[in-house]
Image (tube, rainbow, N blue to C red; front, top):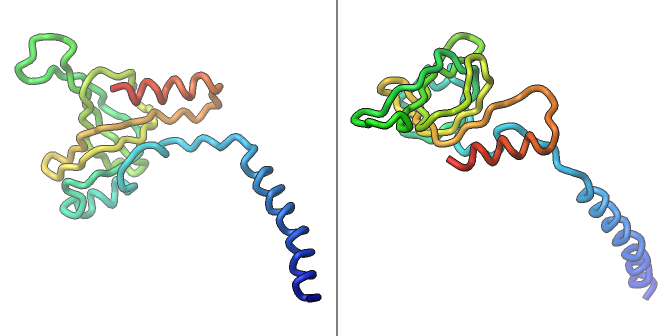
Length: 154
């Protein structure tokens, strides 16, 4: 009988402590992690270029700096709205993968991006499906969510 009473007394102490820890941990605003919503296997550009056959057709999420930004019209299109945005996504070593994005985007050279899409070894291209511009300066809440909404609408 004493064993049951001691277990009940311990439960009276442990359960409120666990509830207190749970409430305290759930009350805080989660930190924003850039590129968390980008789907794909995270791999560095140098590793992809080392064995492109292993990544051919895979959904990847890569990050780097945008270089040689250009907008080209889609073949057979007469309107100026049907363009493909192309640029080189480079790492710090100078290795790059060509990114193909459908549509027009507010990307400039030297923007740090996280891009998700399907990699094609022929042409060393990534057919982008998602991207996010990483801003290293602090943003207010409105600016952060506005950028995410803009990215998700296309």
